[in-house]
Length: 529
Image 1 (cartoon, rainbow, N blue to C red):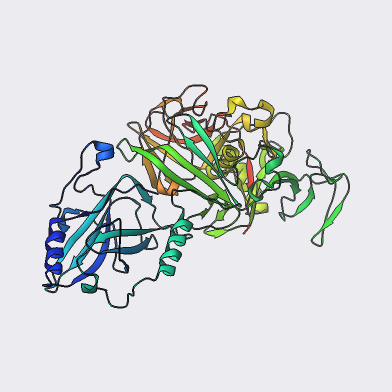
Image 2 (cartoon, rainbow, N blue to C red; image 1 turned 90 degrees about the vertical axis):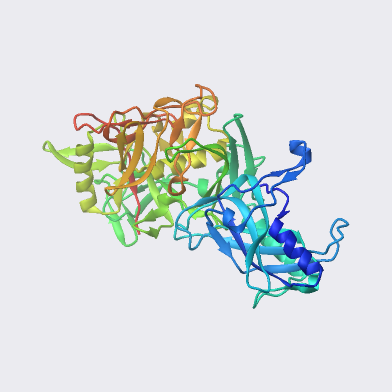
């Protein structure tokens, strides 16, 4: 949660309070305003060596009001730390349902109105490290609740807005529970939430919530998001014909004997896709500390990554499970790098089974083979960046770190059923328009995100963006081969369009120009609505 300074009564608020004490006026709190503006100055002696605050801060000192609410609950505090004047707690909450653009909750202003109808800024405070309020993604909401304690004159002369009642002690306790449930930054203690705090500045990684005290491997085998199963599925129907452990399962994609599944019989003559069944999960990325380096580029200095099988407040369905706007309960990731099947020298289909020599192809060739595969079943596609990011998210929480060099190389080549990750893969779901060092992410012909990273090197920071909080886009090159990530990236492509390619090491990526003569490995996915 953002760390807010002490609450300062403005000069206008002090004047109004003196009139209240003199019995000249009554006080009505009108609304709480929230802004990303920096207003006034508040120094604390224990931190800055002096007590000082700007009291001449008017309501129009907020150049931008990002959100506001007049739904206030006011609780009288009869005694607070020996203060002479009575005090009240003003409680308000906001959510992002109507929010189309995210912002940092930097400053809070409590507004009041006198009997003449003049609205003033009664009190204000701000956070040294603001919390982030993301825009609504159409699926899940985020919110924040604030409790501000301010002094007033006689609490009998504090008027409440119409329809708002005093909060009982029980209600205040319940509100506090709701505040804890929001867990915007303070963290989660739920047993079904698993997380990792990544302090990229100090190269420190800490397991959070349910992941605390767990060890990579068997401890995660039966936890929802990691409970993957390798299987063989039919290219035409998408039916699972055998799971790993079944005598009929074969990494070659061939059944040992015919099987009947869902009233269909599957023969030994056909080849089946060897895939990894991935259950749906929810995720949340909480930026704890960021640096805005300009050019629409915000870097994550410290962040918390969470996953859960349950839709907790603030969590979103991972985009890998959203197909044409609909959620799917599971998806199938290729267990191996794709191979391509040709017939009489003509393009045929993309295959997903064990192949000692996976075939790479140009972007155009991959598209042609995929078209033929989708003609059999339109739920087939090539692996997208969000599919790769899904595995990387599970990987960092399970292993408690980003740096792959400390892990067993063989484990990295077969992360929970996905083999040959070290071969890399091209992601054809997004294109990248490079212009004067700026990366523009293009989807369906429209630019959806833009940032200006250091051109290449070892990763030290990832970019943060509202719509791409699930992605690991490198943006700073101050790392080494060991810390904090241990993988390199290359965004130095000259002006023009390109495609993102994973280099074979976790989080290592490169933007290639997509020249028709260049060849790339790729992987199949199956997502059925």
